Image (cartoon, rainbow, N blue to C red):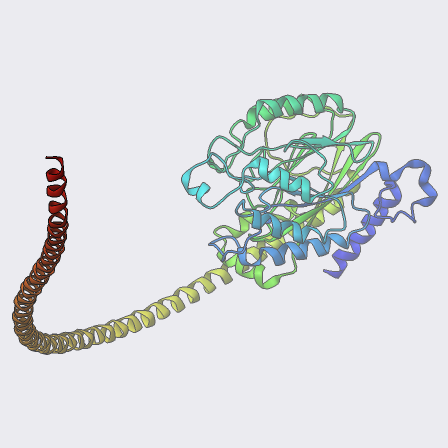
Length: 527
């Protein structure tokens, strides 16, 4: 192994001296500033399918460790110098909720390099339906607004965009998600197809780097995950046979690198599914060729990776072969490539042949190791199955015991309930009798009281009647007395008046008597 490392180191240094390519720092390249090495090279990290979540693990996704896995990938990314950007190729979150995006961008604050992203099918709600709407999933427009607010490097209006990080390069980011249906399949819309044509035509003299969630060429067959119009997509791409093109994707949670002439297809694993890895890519563009140095980087959470591998249905397929991990691919610009859709192993230039031999040897060793791992997995599976069977038997026994205990407790509860019911009925009957007795007693007392009140009322009535008669007699007597008094008074008044009248008459008689003789004498005198 040490010999292999020394050989690879020596070969790599030789390539550096011969081609001028190397992992030199900016200071070390200062003497060659006139050559604009920084414009020649493009370096980035691709992280895919981080599925940030607070949920428990599923059968193939370590969701409970999603934040720790992304944090580890970010830490490794920050240790890389001269990195142009970090690209997240979809399924950033497991469920498109505001809380999930908040957790994702809290982690992204730790990234030292500009982060950018492409949408995956988990990053927004698709066609609205009661189930997904009930969980308060957000739409693509809402997710895009969150990304714009939380990521100052995302200066684009749409979910697909393009930019030129260096003079020699054009980066195209596509949105292959489907809005009108709930599906894991991808699609290149007509608008994005036209956008892709225009970008390729305008920048066909540059190195084209495309990022998207769904791979245009599948790492393995899956009718429910592929791009449904992949042939239309490739019809656009294959028109540019002298333009170096690399397409980086995720979605399948698998490591795979395929070359179709001047086109390189790179599928990157998921952080939450075995092998829990991501990629570092360095591209150097020369006048006559472009060299793609694609590296495979595993997260350092070994226990999570071990459990992910045990849970994976086809771990070997997801991990891929050594050529699907780290590889150097050279595309010559003076050669016209056949871009028919077919899988072929990455070809190397003459200087890389020894490195390819070492890679083949490593591939055999990996296959041997995979075989040994498979046997170990089978043994572990048998032991796990045995353990599960024992646990199941113990659980069944415990369940039976618990069931019997439950039945006994239920029977005792029923008896206690019946006794309590009878006691309650007895108490209710006793209380009813006492209540009836009290009510009867109260009724008797009420009757006595009513009779007493009636007698008192009758006495009062008699007394009132007697008083009434007495009052009437008194009134009559008083009226008689009053009438008598009035009669006496009237009588006295009459008598008084009669006396006065008699007196007046008497006086008048006297007066008349006195006047009578005088008149006689007068008469006589006349005679």
